[in-house]
Length: 299
Ligand SMILES: O=C(O)CCC(=O)C(=O)O
Ligand SMILES: [Fe+2]
Image (cartoon, rainbow, N blue to C red; front, top):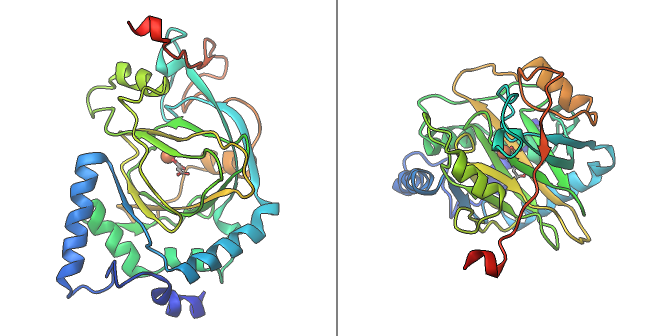
């Protein structure tokens, strides 16, 4: 890692994004722009964040590791942190979705990879802190989830969900030929109101509620996922996987994810996951089906 740590800077497009130049007013402007975008739309996309040669190297590194990726293939609710038992079958809290993709956990990502070196580049951590508007921010020290690489091939989907924190940022490395689009309903849920009606509309793929931000490969993405339900739509036919790096931070140092979450990642099985604290014998969960409104229903 040491060799890469020194050279990370040259792979980052610091001409466009002077993240490490604290004396440069352009950095302040960039931070202000990120905060405005996050406040307005819950997401901020920085295209061309990585220079083309750096991106090519990251793609090569991660493609080489795809054969050892772990696989997720299970049903899951969107509300992973809650007890979701006892809701009517058509309620969003009872909705389960197929979650299917492959991934690497942190300690599978090589010490000397550029994807790891970027995460450990201090100026990036400081920039993420400022852009997300935190007073303090530290890289997660989780051996399993602090850095994750996701691969999505034909038929894979990362279904509707909320994140449990606002400290996840990502770097899109490559996209699929068809599908695999990031879709979200910005700030659909308030701190004090779940707005299940709006969540239902998102689950039904209502275009009035969902946005699909433009993010070409090489885009660095800051996102408020705790209040914005989001997914990666099913991947269609493709000659290459959609690949993304996910980096986790926290306001407090030394953050590791709960052991149970880590175990679920390291030893994936197909048992449905209904949510933290949901009794094992809970029933009533239902695979969500999208009833597309026909023209006549709409009239
Ligand atoms: O792959 C993506 O673009 C998003 C991943 C995501 O939402 C998550 O891991 O929570
Ligand atoms: Fe997410």
